[in-house]
Image (cartoon, rainbow, N blue to C red):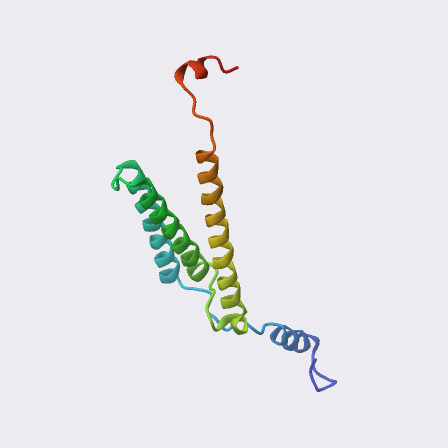
Length: 135
């Protein structure tokens, strides 16, 4: 609120808006930053596609590891270029959110790989004759 009782209503609303707009010190991005993020996202999508479609690396584990790493990098690119997260905005809380997101992504990816590995290891082998008798 304005300290002057005779202040117009729009000035009061204007001051209230500025009082609640703290934490938006970071720029909301320019065309150049959005294009940089877009190009990085396209590259980080095209590389795993190329690795899988052309069977570039013989080891499936190495290919999966590279794809997981590039996926994590792409999450960070999206958070920085499209969500405008950095150490300065929101008083550092967005950096804490970024760190938390990275931890959750690592847990989800490691858990998914662990589950898929154990499902594959514990699956009953099937012969072609067994496949024909499946309902």
